[in-house]
Image (cartoon, rainbow over all chains, first blue to last red; front, top):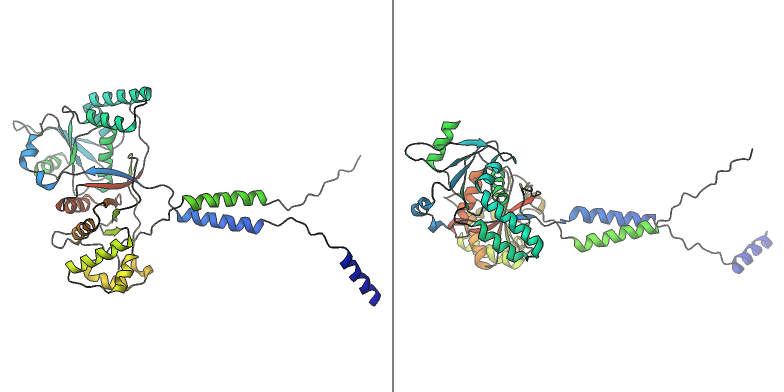
Length: 203
Length: 202
């Protein structure tokens, strides 16, 4: 018995057991993916988009400024309930009411009308974009020139008015349409009794 | 016919490569991440084609949920302490240093100033419960929201206002907020939106 045990001891001393250098990486991978999952869930990769708007300051709004807008160039957009939108051109002249048209925010709705209304400027902006491709205009210069074009004196003036039934989404959609159709002159204003009257007649 | 010998393969796979990939991705996420700020209410912003990114710092964030409750928050812990001290002075409330410390850790809040003390005494997880998140009053009678914004602007003039509202928020609420901002001559602000692709009209 003792001999055998001695024998085995000798064996252990003389021959160092070769350990495999391979490590099982599976738990480490598990850990790695666990941490990835955590970071993916806890982070916001993209910063939110924003839309910059400038409202007129309160002192400037007075009757004089309001009436300065030429009726022929003014378009009023009324945001109604259930994502409906109405628009009319001009205002009441010689006791004839402007035609109130009902439409929506789909590409074939409001946008068609605005593009038609703002066609000259859209063409100019398109030309400027094409020019930018060729001449490698810097972004600042491009924006500057674009601003000059869209603030043209002959451009239509859009008044956005929300009814109490409309939502924030409608407002953003309307502002979006302004950006898409390159409309530089627009304002968010309070709804007037005249607008409500027109709406009431339509509905 | 020779016997087909199926070679027994070891089921152990070399995980080294996978481990490499996992840690590479981990490093990427750790470096690019900025942690999501916890918000008192879930808000889904409307989509827009605007591609301007919001700056990281100096933001007054105004959060409006679908029901029209208004929440408010600024960044910078020292600024928050200053803001609450000033707001307390305006409404005849003094806050203890412990409360100020607690307030400096609050990201966004929506409570009337008279309930601020009890709000700060609550546990963090209780603060966002519907009965505790009441929204900041911004009516014409009691427009605390206006005071918060104008005091915050007084502390740091570089603050930009960012409004994040739910797409279902009704227009009168938005108008009320815009009107309040107009009253204190804050006419430029940002509306947070999610991204939508630009349609091409060539």
